[in-house]
Length: 142
Image (tube, rainbow, N blue to C red; front, side):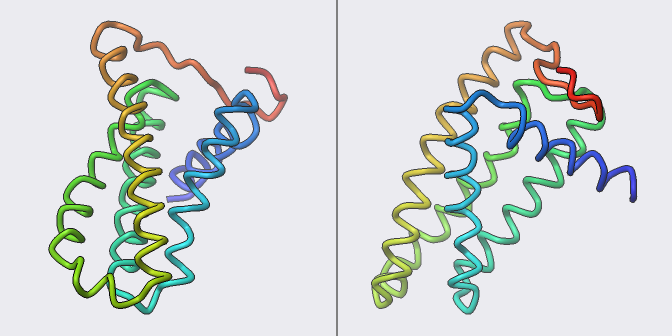
């Protein structure tokens, strides 16, 4: 379990400390919009976002442990598709809370952009780009 937590911290370290500025800003935005679920945590939709995010991060950590920081990591975001499909069945309830509706619209738009990037990365991985492209070390070497 300790090893898993260390790999999770390494994964976040790569994203927030090793990425170039624009991808780093994008990831900060993506994580921030998803973590805004904590503000709406009394709503079932926010609880589902938190659970799906936790599952995706755990799956990414497992992938990272086994094959490193590869282009396939974002494939875990496929979990967003059924989450948003379920939310679509709750539009009437969601629209009763304007702030919740605005956040979920922003979340949907942000996560869909991410899914496009993740799909491109997955295709590149399937075509042979499988080498880890970021590494973590305490010495700061990439």
